[in-house]
Image (cartoon, rainbow, N blue to C red; front, side, top):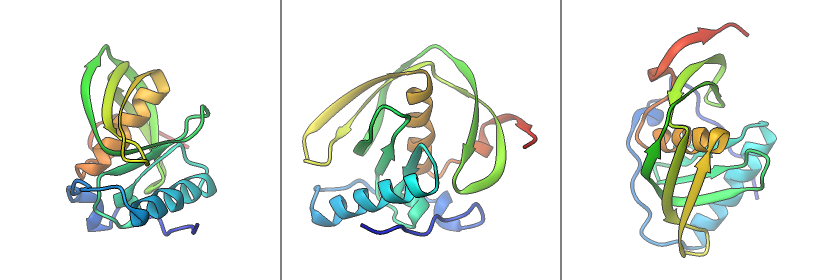
Length: 150
């Protein structure tokens, strides 16, 4: 495993749409392991592949309930609304309030190549939405209602 460089806000790769992953092979498994190590090292709760310079649809999340790795994640249902404070490893020193769904259902593929579905509420739902946005070139700053001084 290796800690990868996290791309920062000015990097144009963060604004590009990621490509679907055709199969979960050893390269994808290594990428997921590296992303988890990178996320933990940076003290984050989520990381998307574009943030380490890879335009693939892969995210890792750990909001304190253990790691979730999901390939080709899609939000297939959302409900409710919550205004939440967000920051981003790619935009250090900034945080702001964003509207997010209160509950989501996300489907995708796990690291073993099996179809999975996650029901998430609250902070985990927020993390899924934030990381999936990264896969479409969207940053939380695009959705911020107001910034919060740190």
